[in-house]
Length: 335
Ligand code: GLY
Image (cartoon, rainbow, N blue to C red; front, side, top):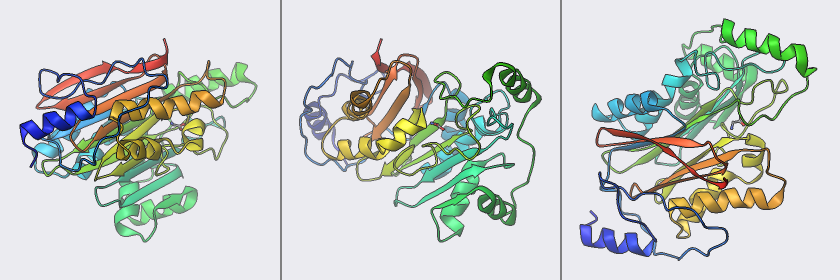
């Protein structure tokens, strides 16, 4: 158990700024463009601030579902699955699950992964016709000897495990896609506006961290395209000793940098969650023209300290602690 005095000492070593009203450290204001982080000793004591739920984008309903699972005594794993199922089932959320925008051929193809506090992981990629890919990913983790199943094989596994086959293309998404076809000349696009993957991290009452990530991927992508979201270490990574991270934005860039693994590894090396997210994003911008791309990282450490950073403005995230939910704008590299 971490007493208050030790917590404060460790917090100041980690460069934290004063806590929010409900006791969490606020993410550091980012002016960090190359400042060396201060190494800190390994911190493995679990947070006193728990249960705790944090997710990418404006997702209060998802956080509420995760919180409800935790309130019922569920694990962090139960919480993140319950949480991300909310946008998966919501036809108005056109970046995740049912109602997601299709690929350029009109097929809704889904990617998801989940990771628990023991380092177990499950993933599905290029999955069609199943509303809750996150639950299939969990089934892969718990009921198969594998980590990742893809396409037809993932669908067959889902059906064999009782998931229902259904159409995921809503009239609204189909109408938009048909409009797109009129002018797009079938050209796949790496747009930054039309996707907002949900990544969620939770800390349960035992201090264990789990995470989930689920998406329909880039709108109007090439058939067969898989993004970062189902890739352990890219869209999501959890190391229960130190923390977890997830990513949103252009998956190709996140994959090339093993983004979420990088964020967690940086926390392991002593960065605060905020510093780690910033450094991971800056590695991307150092390598290429970033004026028209978006990537955002979200991280939490074992103490419940959190951070977020994106390349462009516009990335926000939702945090729930002690029944208080806040939607917070992430700091970004490009103002
Ligand atoms: N980050 C979601 C994707 O690129 O598919």
